Amino acid sequence: MIKCNNVLEQARDLSEFIFERWRDILPAGDFVLGDDVSRFETWMSQRCMGAYAISMNSGTDALLLALRALGIGPGHEVITCSNTFVATVGAIVAVGARPILADVGDDELINVDTVAPLFTERTRAVIPVHLRGRPVDMDSMLTLCRAHGVAVVEDCAQAIGTTINGKQVGTSSDAAAFSLHPLKTFGGLGDGGILVTTNPEIAAYARRARNHGLQTRDESIVFGINSRLDSLQAAALNIKAPYLDRWLRRRREIAAFYDLALAETATGTDLGGGKPGSSYYHYVVKSAKRDGLQRHLAKYGIQAAVHYPVPIHRQQAWLRSQPPIALPTTERLSREILTIPCHHHLSDCDIEKIVVTIRSFNARYEFAPERRIPS
Image (spheres, one colour):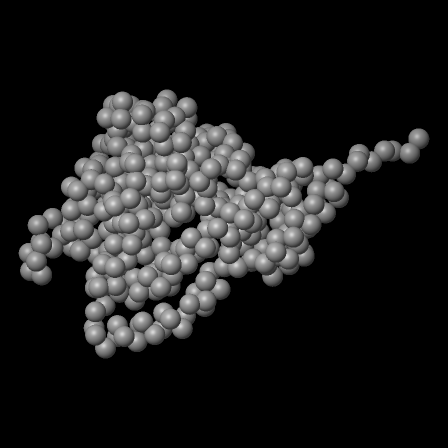
């Protein structure tokens, strides 16, 4: 099976080096917020143009503490999208704020046209999601939000390596949250996340709040949470870090091949439209016969997935706690989108097979001539 993700392969590739480093850590007893964590945070800071980088237990916690640092809570509204992993909205609910969901464009991203009509006097933040590693138009989003005195927290869970004008996304807003989950392009061997900000006050709050609000071992000055990255995860990430740009280049090579090879098919190319700076965490096509295409690919040993088949505003968690809403573009895309494999463990033969298989489906089903009834 040609897999849609390479989580197992990525874990195995550098396992010898990772285990060797872990054997050094274990007798030292440096398990939480140790030297490896500091080294990882320094690397992330440098990648993010010198911004503060505070590691945590997950990208979800990074969103949560970013919102708390901005003073967002009950009585406030935060705007984001519905076609994202549930954690984006879950973090808003966790701080006691009300999530407001915007529709998206055909590129699956929110934009100022879908967000601006939702502003009210209670709006305190917007969370643009760089879905699939595609960059949201941050210049226009920041201009809109700054004009209204509204904070911006970027959801960069899928966007390590995503850039705007050569600059890592997550560095132009109030704060950003990155995920280090094993499924990500750059993931650990367990959960992890990192909050990035250029604001020293947000950084100071996040650094303290992730560790129970402790100022010293016995003094807590704010009520925080337990969200510390452990040294074993940080060590694994430090070993993977030098390879990240190579992995990103391979994803972009594969995406460029797909763009050319699928351009004239009914399935077409990535919904991001070849956005400059995309890191291609996912390469997503759409088809009016999506389920059939997914089955056809599986028949020939190619795994394809749907991210995400049920938008958040159609989930039970939303329907039990929030008023029903309609998001036409989000709903239409959820019925048509399909993620095809795009990761650095794919061979040239793999991607050629994927293209040939998609073309064969298109030729048989998408472009099949109408059957005529014999006269």
